[in-house]
Length: 508
Image (cartoon, rainbow, N blue to C red; front, side, top):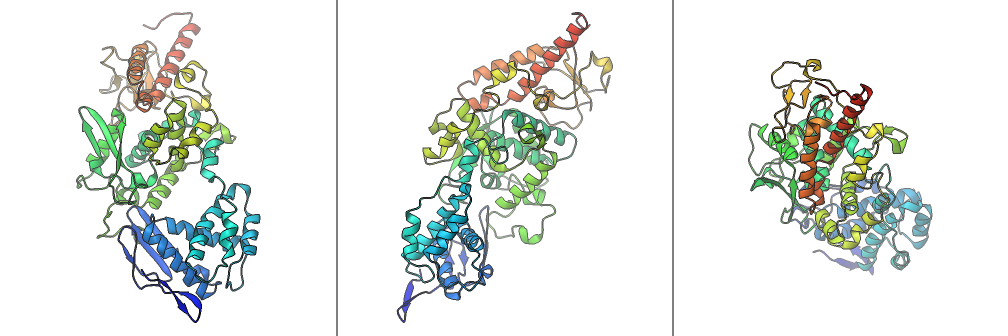
């Protein structure tokens, strides 16, 4: 590694022509734009944005950052660089900057909003290293000043604690509505299969979008009749190396969708990406795509997958009562917060939540136990209460019998659960054509579902509740069919109401 040398008594950063990232990629620290793709992460730092700064200060910044690039996660240096840009912008240092002093840091701190205290933490990391290296551009007392002002909690922790309706976990009402909206949009051909699969996997694992982007086909498997997903723990060890995995059980209905996604491709093997760049980024510019030779060629970058997925889901997102019935804000991180919060509500220990979310420090999961209570405390309570219209899981059309069905007499339109009865329980308004969802469980939350008034819905409910009880030791598995259970209860209640209105007469 190049060292800072003395030149006439003034420390000068001697940047090397070549340096290595922690994962072994070569880059030139002397260039004005640092840009590369490291695993599932896209890295870019444009030092031309510092034209107002003294050239020696910029060189010192480069030298400091290149050390972080060599020893830390791919995006760590990017966060430090962006934090420095934010400092310059907020303090309005428009003239040529030669040296940063305590006065500048004090001005920055005073202008930060209360919830932005964490930004001072990023600047502190950069300045501490800068001063320790003895490089020009920052006065030495800046390090002591920042050490005395410990950073506040990160905004993401506050979002969970306060159940923020924009950035925090989804409420039970929103969870049900979003789950249903995505299924409906797929059934109507409004979204691609990969969007539905990604939504289901985020709900089922609480994974980071970087973990999802690094998934390969071979990470999905069936072992002794159970479906499993090995989720790469990209935040541990080398961020893109796929050396560590956490195994998650996947429900049969979601597994069927994953299989359909894999089988829909003409080519591909176990090493191909589960979420292919060519499928997700159909309209992306070539410069945003990975090129051959990239060890993750075929995978989406974390940024692209997050941006495209969020944009698609935002177009079909349901309304939320927590924001005055505006559209539900979509962010992949909210799925993770929802997963952690639901685990805590269902009685999981801190160690269990930390393991599921891939946290090495148990303190990182404290926020899930401090979060505000959800709208519905648990599934049993939710099913016994009158849900708000927005949260209704059943959204089909009740009919008396098959004669009233949209596709009456059509082959495949009848829906039967042979595990409980040979008697049909409903019809499908599309005749069951092109449906990849698990019948009849998924049907109860589908807009095409036409339940019969005299269908054996109670038997289906009894089966699902027994299955839920059998998995009581694993809250995540037990909760897989919760939305369907709510929908079935709604159908049963609707049937009872209709019969009561008709004087207690039961359909033929």
